[in-house]
Length: 238
Image 1: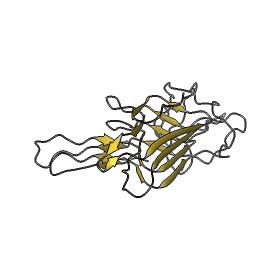
Image 2 (image 1 turned 120 degrees about the horizontal axis):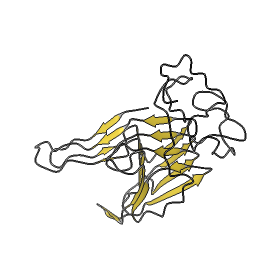
Image 3 (image 1 turned 45 degrees about the vertical axis):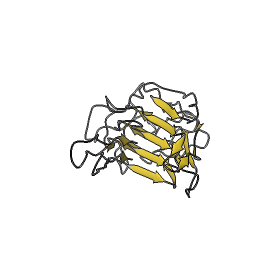
């Protein structure tokens, strides 16, 4: 998927949050999905003489929600920070709703934020809110093997786990490689090929093709032993 989130304001510019998905107090499971070319951009001041707003969560902004990303690919998104995912725990003592921003990564790819933009993943847990101390907590858990190229924590957010891969996943261009939706197929030699954990893996990938039982790929697509590229609309990047 792709999209854009832009905020505007009458004094300082408003924030742009979540170019494809804004999860507020909700429970989101992303499985066998590709999110690419999304952007979150802060808006300019109405009067044009104040600071522009910031954009966070180019693909996904998670605010006090539960977010599970399973066998998915978040690649080449853009925001001031958290270009793939920005997970924020923020709730004052007198507020209602969730007090947890819980993120789980399961055999997924977060990579290749657009040049000049921020990290692929950001966890943020400020010490205080506009209503007093921040009682919300940010958490992160990993399942299987994950590739996260760049990540950071802010304020009181917990330390990040050690990700299995932090290198370029070497994905092809977005295109029609079979199935109902465009995908970004791993190139020959990609580090994500056969690198996933088969335990609990979906039986098919985003394209509806079988995942190899004992050698699953990380991300939304399972590169097949023989990829039929004769009728694809591109002959490069696969």
